[in-house]
Amino acid sequence: MDEIRSLQVGEEKLYNMKIYSDSLLKLIRDCPDDGHLMRATGLMYFNARISRWSVEYMCTKDKEVYNIGARDTDALTKQIAKDVLEKKNEDISSESD
Image: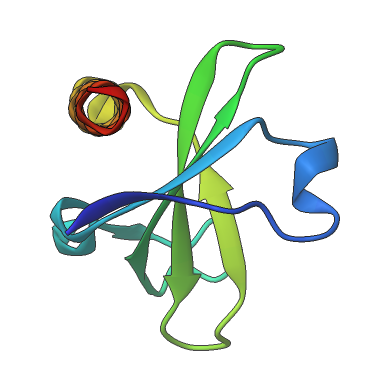
């Protein structure tokens, strides 16, 4: 399921939008601190100042959370955002009919 989620207190200082997508759950990468495996949590965040999406990952060792924007996930995050925002616009249009 893909959906826009509300930003939590403090997140709104850094990000403009948060989206959850099951499609992100398959993403993995190495932790920048200890090299252990990190898995995506399903959340992605948009920072309008740099016009970039980042994916949230959690280290499997220490459970530390990282938001990482990377070229290898750009196409996926942009497509998810496009799909979610189009669906939101369709929902709004059908509500006003």
